Length: 140
Image 1 (tube, rainbow, N blue to C red):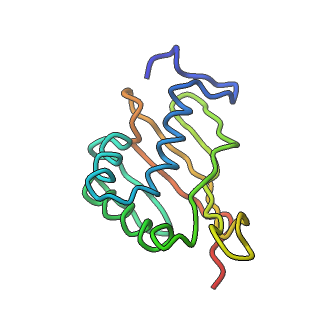
Image 2: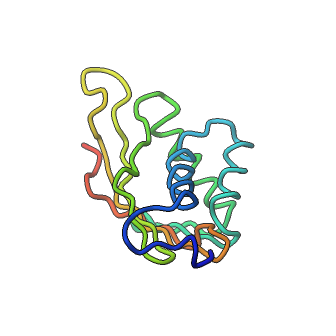
């Protein structure tokens, strides 16, 4: 990433906002081929995600991880993946909150789960490291 796209004031450049938007969107991609392309476009070849004591390294593992999350939470229209309104950037680190909001029923629009996301981007603007730290766990 060039210095012209880095911003340490907390305001996102267009390029970094695009990363946040694409990250939020990847969790809702239903088509397996489109999902694999979205993962490859977003994470570097050796990108890694850390979540809930697990780690997923490389595109194959990340595609599987995103597919599992999609099937568990989004495919059945129970939740929508949203967030990013609080995005901030410092150098190559982007941070924001991601939420699973209820998509239907009496709780529609209410947050069921949330996590703070920390992305470390490489020089090409792809995710090198992805940390999801749960803030509000799903109710049992």
